[in-house]
Length: 153
Image (cartoon, rainbow, N blue to C red; front, side, top):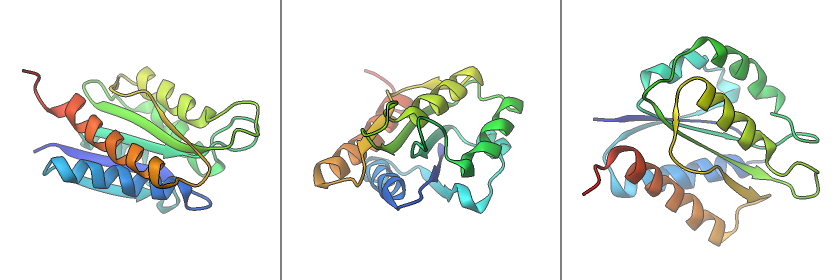
């Protein structure tokens, strides 16, 4: 059975809410094991190598940077091999900044550099997810499973 990990950074709870909704979407259509970890718990990037599916979530800080909480993890990712892993990225964003949701783009590129197959375009939600955004997150989780682990007919 496939194993999926969701690692997220959430200062105000927005990205955590997205992570929860994505996990709901995944479990609705599959029996995969999901481990959800807040980046503040200090997971090591090498942990990603133990999973078939990887979902990373981060809000964008400042003018387009990763949150400080994600920096060590991001640097550690240089030393792992994610070849054959399926991955996608999500995050809450703020359109008042010049680079909208740049953390999602930064993490997507890092996953790609380490060999992961990016199966979905990054999901960016403006600030606090509303009901429609929650549905998008649930669909993101469902689509992640469909594009990663369900054979096409």
